[in-house]
Image (cartoon, rainbow, N blue to C red):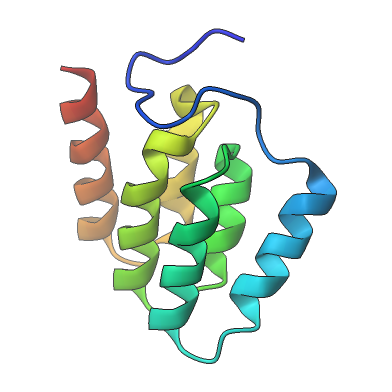
Length: 109
């Protein structure tokens, strides 16, 4: 595996599908976005994820702000960060897409 230059927290392979499904179920079972977000951050802080897995977790969030917060946090744990532009599809608002893109660009400078 070739590490992306912005990797700061991920030194391995993405979560196995069965483990990811269990983690996603845990996120979805939380009643409030704030709890979903904290659960998701806890999961990602000890695992590496693919961008599609990050997108699936974002989709479990109800609010744009939570999705953006998680997408920005999870970037450092993404094994295929070169494809992170795909995460923009979870956002309804252009300013969220712009904010994520700007964060990614700053990480490459």
